[in-house]
Image 1 (tube, rainbow, N blue to C red):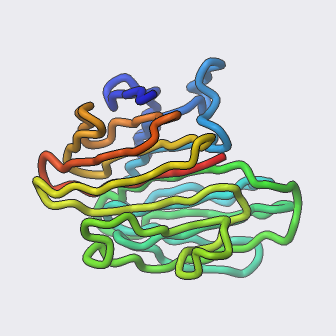
Image 2 (cartoon, rainbow, N blue to C red):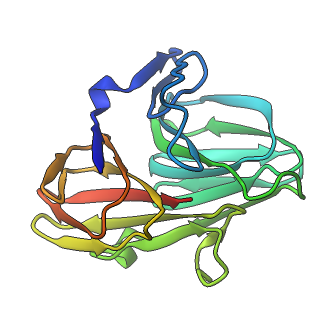
Image 3 (cartoon, rainbow, N blue to C red):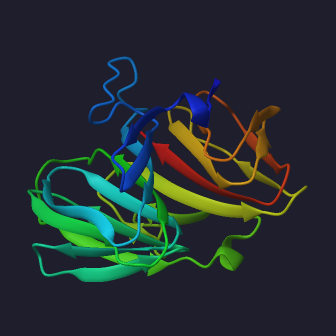
Length: 232
């Protein structure tokens, strides 16, 4: 099953300083028939105006992955963590038993990012935060695991979920293969470019929900940047 979710048909919110598209039910965009894909609960496509952002607010019992596509986001939380995550970098926050954080675009230009929420394998626990660069040149033509709940993924940022977040860049005409487990829920979004997945065209910022596919062949129709979640 490969279900295409075109960008133009996603739920939308325009707060002036924030323009958001929601791949799943979120906030004022409530859709009881689209509450997630397996343990993947949220995939928001956010554009944040310069010198604006999200003031301090609480989270609990959620793994939150921020993939910065353009610009940078500055994070500060109640644990004392502070960091600036720029395009090509990834940050993760395990909200655990509860944490407050703020996220601001302190740059002179718009920041574009994906924010991905995945349900944890267990409730509670000490909150944590981390960030890491993943240079696009290092993931050219291959899926690189950027966040993972599996101990074997030693180079990935750790999350407390039965899930992996992966990324790749493909030049026009290049292909990548991915073999999912039988019971896994996959969700893929091109951050840029367009690709063909098992014969189905997927354009920039479209979503694709995937289940029960023995093998994925992804061919870039133009230079492309892809993010993939493989979740329980």
